[in-house]
Image (cartoon, rainbow, N blue to C red; front, side, top):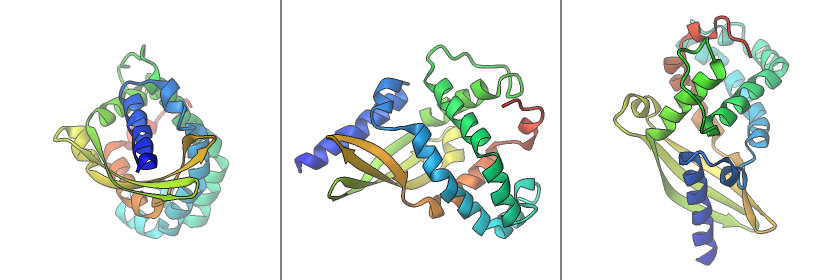
Length: 203
């Protein structure tokens, strides 16, 4: 029981650090760069496996037009670019001096970080279940939006976060239910991210 309460305190600390844009406390339990790098391949595999279906759903998106093999080659070639962009957005999100830019094309990183702030402000999380196994824990967390535009775009998703305990410190390792999360998150991205934003982007 004590272990579960301690772990819940860690989850609460992570949530508070995100809300308060406190990078020091956030990074104590989340190595975002490693977490994203480790999950990139699994996400790519899911996108490739369902490439034909996603092309039917989003025919305007060239990402799915040329098939699974090309998709995987493209993501392999541009992995460092994609992850570099995301990591820079995360850094900008935690920058308390961030100023809202006029539009996406004027400052892609800052604009995306500002939009991320709006999304996170519209979200609430609730712990549904926690399972322990030796030095690991699986936390099932439901994240859902409010009645704002950003909350409605996000909707309601169930995440299964795997943590590992090292030297008494819990660290986020992975998301264990990526296959079930890819379709709704992709749909969210397709509806929210206008293809016009990509024009002239300088990463």
